[in-house]
Length: 334
Image (tube, rainbow, N blue to C red; front, side, top):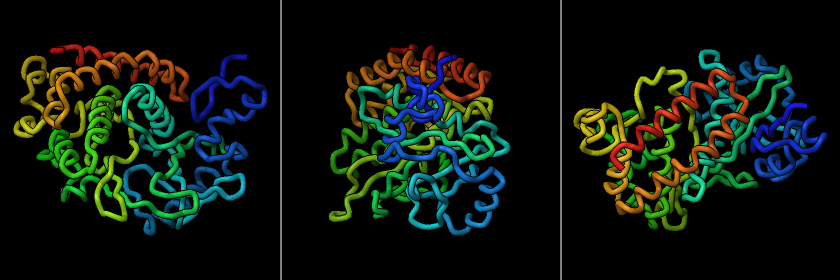
């Protein structure tokens, strides 16, 4: 029997019951706080889409990907319009296998950030009754009892109307974090790691609304970044239209991804550009360079997860090529 892997952790399935289920007990417990969960949802894609069309006017979740809210009811996920603890996302028709790609990228982000400050939202893949895989993520703004935690997307916190505002660079966002988060260093480190990893994975959709801050209700002050979410190798679908969603530095806002030293010399962002980003948001040059090196050194571990993922082979190969290309870019100027 060929080796099979958990649809949550991508770890090998070692026992016959695990292989039959498609999940490790560890993986199910990490996502649901219990391993007694039925991973096959009692609905087809058609059922999901019918419910999505009926509920989308009531949900505050935006984006091109159809999404529905769910709760764990007994041992099964059930759709809900209020108080959901999970978000279910099938692949859009125009972006086939996006669910599998997002799952792989989130797992790879965990591997690339190992040893650092970045955390990612809990996530996995489940099956619909017709066999389609859907992406499942646990909401991090809800406690187990349904209590809502206070958080704010950075576009709202910064008063930015357009989430793709090209006058807002990652350096500008980092300086906002430095100024407004009560203990800024861990948040700055997490943010810096997320920008680097998004570049490496071909995520050209890291716009400002895909970043959030957590807020202490008793003081009203920001305490840190939310876990990373919506990390997808979108370049697989956009043919690499841009390296990343926003300009890298404040200086880069002038020419819209064209004025950094790397862009001027090579036509792409380099390791030197990212170290400049780190120092621009308040990290020391040594810390910025060490962080970049650590993430690049974690690439072999991320590639193992890519190979184990449920992405189609051609998309695995394409993402591997993007990753190798970006590692070469990051080697320049350091």
